[in-house]
Image (tube, rainbow, N blue to C red):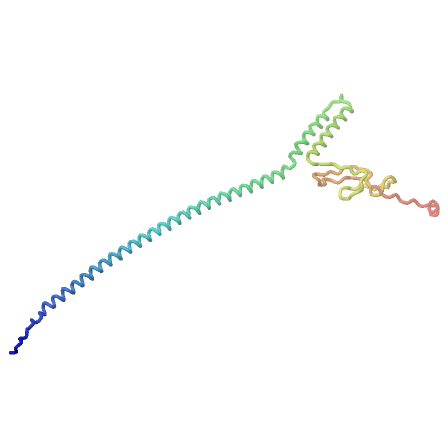
Length: 223
């Protein structure tokens, strides 16, 4: 034996070491399982939040679409009503224009029938009325009739002593005249009448012409 005694350390117990390692592994697995469960809960929570956000966004988009659809429908209804109103205005204007053309002479006709009443009363006079009184009555009726024409812009024009104008004069004859220059109106059978400056009918007139030059007496004898 040596002077210094070696201290013998006890050999490690393999069973105990294995048990410790198993316990350590289980603890690590527990921590891992606990961490995995927390992570799974967090992921589920995030997914739920995302779904709620998506649902809110879908609801908002649906409300916006519904609002736009309602506004579009209202605008379309307004357009249809405006189009119908426009068509009604067009039809009313067309009818008014047609009536205006069709009954353009209504006012003139109303005034003329009043003059006709005067003429009929004059024609119904008995024989006791003198010709002078009848003539005066006709002159009054004629004046009234001319006033009616004036009110409706119908104006007569005398052509006598004016230069012949083929645009407003209808020549019925030409007569040589020593008192008038050739081409002058010397007689009128009917006046020219205008409606608002437009010729209604031309005047019927006789126009002066140059007198033929008389042949010398000597030349006539020779013939």
